[in-house]
Length: 260
Image 1 (cartoon, rainbow, N blue to C red):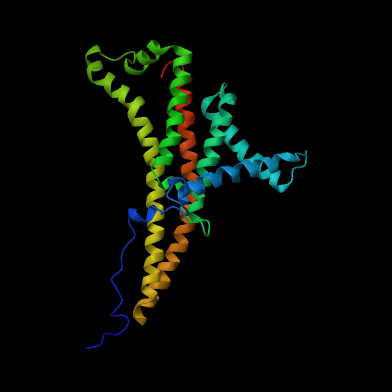
Image 2 (image 1 turned 90 degrees about the horizontal axis):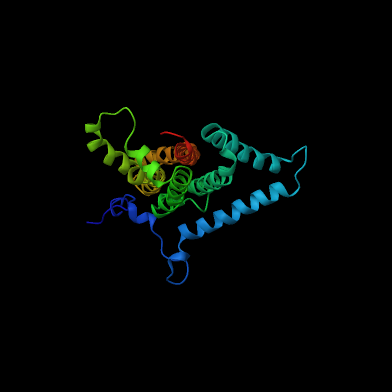
């Protein structure tokens, strides 16, 4: 007996982690994969934008100059000055680079024809986290010395000595393992989950369009949810760039504090 076209349709294959891996666009090098090329493009894009926006700086700024100054002022005042305090200025370039880099690569997830957040590859958040990790430990050791830094970290004053048996290793692991791990995993997890949801509703809608007539209604609903989620995901992408940069500033502020 012949099957109807919709009955002969293969079963829906939901998106998975396999959809986050791409073959090289040319050759066999990992540097030619979509995530790496998007990462390199983000550097070119950020450099070009802020170079052009600052090239003809004027008292009455153009829209482009105003946009660049707005982003820089947000990082400098809203994160650097408010979190780090009087020593904030020397860390503004570092925080500014982190914020713009993470934000741009996150937003690639909702940009047509790109539609992939590069921070959904765990290696990229880990790489940025390593820089944050090295900076705040370097700052603390330079200011206090290694011995004092470790003492303040593991042996907080006013705590019964017996508690140090448990507290000291916990605090050590927090600063040297948990902090960098959670910083990277928070960014990666949000970008991965958000992109996976967008894939699910988009591919699901496409699949239902090829199904029976009454199922096509749910395809419209699925595409509608995908569009709504795209706007929601854009908000999450901006928020995660802010949180990542804010936490980096908090760690630096803690490294500069006399006691933490």
